[in-house]
Length: 285
Image (cartoon, rainbow, N blue to C red; front, side):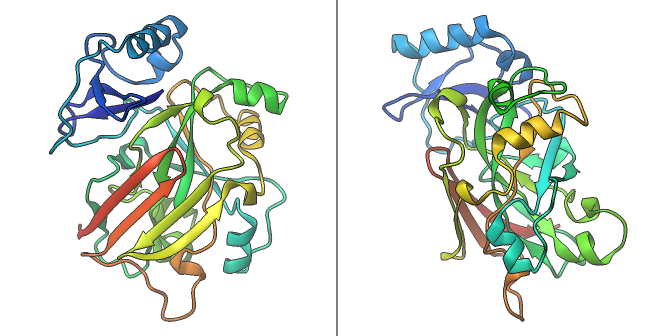
């Protein structure tokens, strides 16, 4: 299933994109798309049955804002330097273990919402990423099979980053990762049954129409299953938590000087095969 939330910010309602591409209203079946829904097999069964019945009311998508596909996100866990080609382009050694950092849940916005270049920023960068959405509470998972069984679905994430804040201002990466609007998510939460192999997904990103990133999750240093298993050794993952799994080569940081960092007015488009497409116009904070 392709689950999404539509409407003005803060007032989104649950919806579903059916196999024919028609947007359907889920408000009569569930109150929202969140961790509680993803952890409730009976409720998910009702959604699936309603989708298969063909009786869900259609929504007119014209002019309708698409919000983040998940409400009440608990935490956003991010994996850094998780693609062989990205490590090479930035001159970094591939990590021996996954690099973990966090984004606050309030950085998450809709897939087509305006992204704000922070005040004083000269190094705002793009990163297309596969987001993993957790559907079952995970502690100390012992195998890749067990890890994937705890995944509810997948989505497109844009891990926007400010490289000066991240790298040159001391401390951890968090200062360059948690600026307002720095994690567009969606358009859909695609349930795991529609993604038979998360290591076989094409990722692409364009800036002002120019292709910048053209990669595949096959290049990941640590697979989706390994990332989920590994993270569960250090923290409890709850339904509705999100893991951003890293970005392939092609970011501004890895390009020759002068590096083409983002400015207000730039347009970024990104997609992952089968998971949908985003488009953001960048503005000034």
